[in-house]
Image 1 (cartoon, one colour):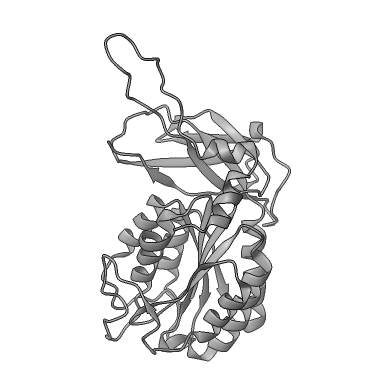
Image 2 (tube, rainbow, N blue to C red):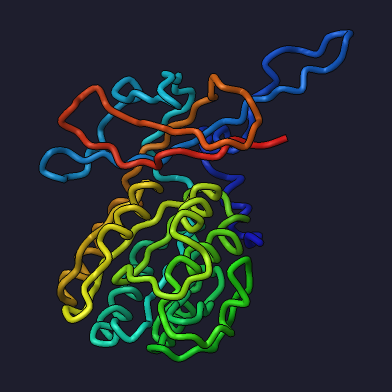
Length: 322
């Protein structure tokens, strides 16, 4: 459950942030024949915009954006370029044997990243995954706890705070392989599903999955249902390589990025890029013209009027279901 501190922070956020958390009023007033039950829930999107030189653009206005759902144009009801909403992060560390050569650098860079990116009201958790998925630290804003958790990660050593869920019992499998998709699924469905505001998973991995009980499509769906963005830092042993296609699929479908890393110096730079991105997002909110509460997946497309700019945002969401 979210901490009292975080709930208070969320209640104190700017008016636009509060508005984004509320559903729309009924489209029509009640009549003598009965109450109109149909409601349209506000959909919010966090978007990052880069120019052709890949530099982040932070001076756009609402009029500069175009938004559609299932190819139908939508009206942007709320817009903000303030980074006032709290960030909830899940840092996932690949501790399979293929990451052993970089684990020390991963721990140092990951710890520094959390210290830099987290501000008042933000929280983070730390998980590791190999053949098991281990919760090394639950959500906290305590930097010391998070630092200890990151440095507690060990290559192919099961144990720690184990998480059980649909793929489970995770943490007690003791089988060979790398449970990347299980880790994503569990981080979303067991942890991030109760959080509000901006949510992101940062994964340091080679994106090789061998042994997960859920498929990549299920991992992506769990992120989409919880409005979670997935960013991947690809760190691969040259002997094994990286699964670039899987990494791109995970990131692109959720509005995240993939950054390839070949050294500890570049790893630190990659964390800096993700940190900048998390703090440079636009918030777009709209009431869908399709008010059906059918639980179906709706495709979202966000563009700008300037075709030289590239928008990074999630590709869709699941409508609420009666």
